[in-house]
Length: 230
Ligand code: DC
Image (cartoon, rainbow, N blue to C red; front, side):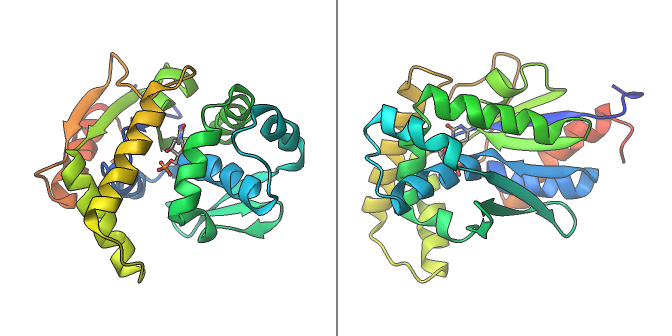
């Protein structure tokens, strides 16, 4: 590892577990790029929504895939992802709750996963990257140099998500946020292809009672101890 030119860090976990915050902070510290794989599933979910494609119809969603072009532009220090869907910046639009749900549905389809996994591998080619998602350590990069699995209690994750929504001016009862989160957990972990699960060789971190700084330090200290990149 010490003499290796590029390294890959896979960070998986359920929604609002803290993985993207950790991934972004670690990317900044390690001077590598951050890739948000969930944003790609969200972009497909948004396309399906905008074009009134029947999301429950796998064949129709599959047929629409050649019309979908997704690009991730790394902004500034490389940790901010701008998501481009067919030449349009959809970074904000993909964060709507309806699109979270759509992303989880299209993520069940083999053809969607095949297209996006290919794109994820292409983006990471010849670069040091930190990628977060649900199947990064199990499917996308089974030989990643580092694998982390980030968890937190459903209550705590719902609280974080609720706060995030409130900051954006989207008030919603906490129970509703919790129900949506549980639905997504179930959909993501029970699907047939590449379900959310802890890679056997991943380090598990429970962030329920940790501050963002503590979460980031745990991951970064582990990586910097084993790499020459600090
Ligand atoms: O990380 P996120 O909440 O933005 O992801 C949105 C959805 O995309 C998630 O509910 C499941 C799907 N997803 C996936 O199946 N595999 C990934 N590597 C990333 C996300």
